[in-house]
Structures are given as structure tokens and as C-alpha cells.
Amino acid sequence: MVINPGDLTSEQIILVQSEAHLLKKVNTDVVQRITADGFHVIMITSNQPSMILSKMYARADINPEKVYFIDTITNYALGKDEQDTKDTLFISNPGDLTEIGIALTKALNKFENEDVCIVLDSISTMLIYVSSAKISKFLHYLTNKIRLSDIHGVLFAAKNGLDPGFMIQLTTFVDEIIEE
Image (tube, helix red, strand yellow):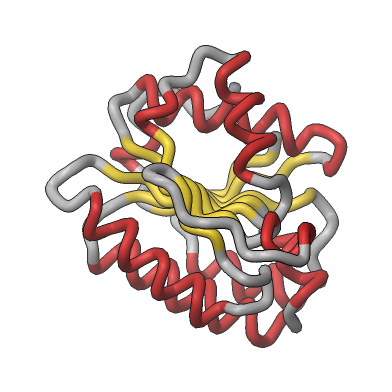
């Protein structure tokens, strides 16, 4: 994995770009590294349902107590409301950025005084549901929330999957870009 020990403490917000077909593996590798470094992960997922990610993480020996999900896709895909669990908040759909923001605040309160890394999987998938202008505003909010909360963040995106103008804006929000 490209992210080395200490990257999360030397750089606060990292954008990880990967070939689309490698995103699942890169996600697992990054979460494994982050949790091994002692961080709790708050995973905002619109790419894979939390149930699928939980199984992937279990196969990679990732401690399930270190990962908390904000699942934006399950309710949308199933067409019904799943009940929140001790490790997952379910959002009605990936396009409800306000609901995601509220869920994020709840999740951060749960891990107050802990080392936390917010992981967003993935920007590319969110663009299916919301315009790039709205995603850009949301990412500006998210990255500022990360900085003001003095925590860390990793954003995933498919390599070459973002409009060049959007990518320029995005690069101003992050501290480092890693291409996997």
C-alpha cells in the first residue's frame, strides 16, 4: 500500500485515486492501515453497502470495533429503511448530503476524544446521485469539518473519473494526493 505509517499524522486530508476496478482492494488496504495505526474509521460509503464492506474487512482481519459506517446506499438499494445499529447509521439515499452531514456529527460525537479518520468511499460514486457543484460544496464542508475537529480524512476517487475542473477544486481541499 502506498500510504506509509505516519502519513495520517503528517498529512491531515489525503485524496486516494485508484483505477476503478481496484477501488475495493485499495479501500480495504487503506482501512487496514488506518486501523492498524490506532485510528477509528468513520466510513461514509456510497460505493458499497456496509454489510459488504464489513465482510471484506473481516476477511482482511480488520477489527470491526474500529470501523463505524455511515451507509448511504443500503436503504436506497433496498427501497426500505434499515434500522441503525451500534456500528452503522443508515441514510435514506446517497444524494441527501444534509442527512450525511447530520450523521457525521452524530458519529463524531460517538468517538469524541479518540483518534478518528473519516473515509469517504467514493467521490466518483456520489457524482452519480448529486451534481459536481453540490459535491464540491459538500467536500468543502467535510474537509473543513475534518480540519476544525483536528482529525484526519481520506477521500477515494476513481482515477481519471473526475472532471478536470472539479479535480482542480478538489485539490485545493486536500493536503496530498496519492495515486494507487
